[in-house]
Every structure is written in C-alpha cells, then in structure tokens.
Length: 144
Image 1 (tube, helix red, strand yellow):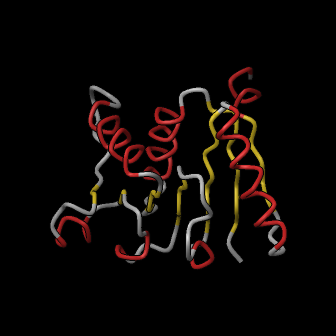
Image 2 (cartoon, one colour):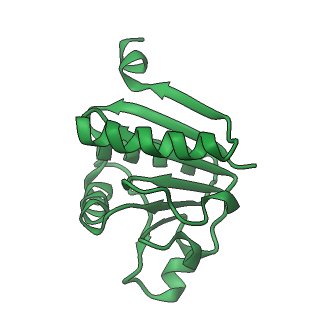
Image 3 (cartoon, rainbow, N blue to C red):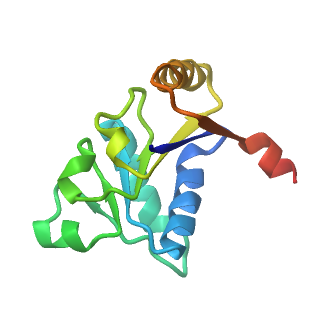
C-alpha cells in the first residue's frame, strides 16, 4: 500500500520542494512531480537556480525521450509516462491519478487557505480509501 505523507504549512512551497527533491536524490530515489502547468514551470525555473554549487537534474514532458529516461526527477501532468514508481510528489489541487502504484506519495501543502482547503479534500479521499496518513507540520520543523 502506498505510503502517503502530507507536508503542510510550507511557507515557500517551491523552495521546500527543491530541498525535499535534493534529499530524495541523495537517497538515489526517482521522483515524479505533478501539478498545474504554471506551478511546474515555476518549479522548473526554481530547480535551475536552487543552489549556486549544485543542480537538481530533472526533465519535463518537452524533453527528449532519452533525457526523460535518464532523469531522476520528472515534472509533468502524467506521472506514468516516465516509468517511475518510487516517489510521487503532488503540487496540484487534485488527487493524482494512479497514485496507488507508487511506493510513496508526498503532498506538499502551502499555508494559504486555498491550499489547506484542497488538502483537506485530498486527505478525506485517501482516508475513505483506507490509507493511513502521515502528517508533518513544517512550522514545527522550522522551530526546531
């Protein structure tokens, strides 16, 4: 059964996502990232400038099939095209289709009202399907 985590109260959601992707890459995991096209475009740009000394290798649907297969992180609307089944990171408002084929699903929730309201709906959906959910409050993580 897919392990589902909610990381909520992320004040700088894209920067937090980059940090999480860097951590996952350090563990040699392949990650599919889904969300609205505008959000993924912003994340793509953020990943290019995330750190001066390192680069988060990634691809988008516009990249060649060879680049997509070689990339450890894939950004796009359809997480199934890359053959990744380890980690799915959701930046969107909807429950990602086919999430259950991933080992782990991470929901990144901003601290604005819209983000929290949409996350509550997804939380209820996963609970109704019988998933045990993990929650991580990033305001508490920032305090420690």
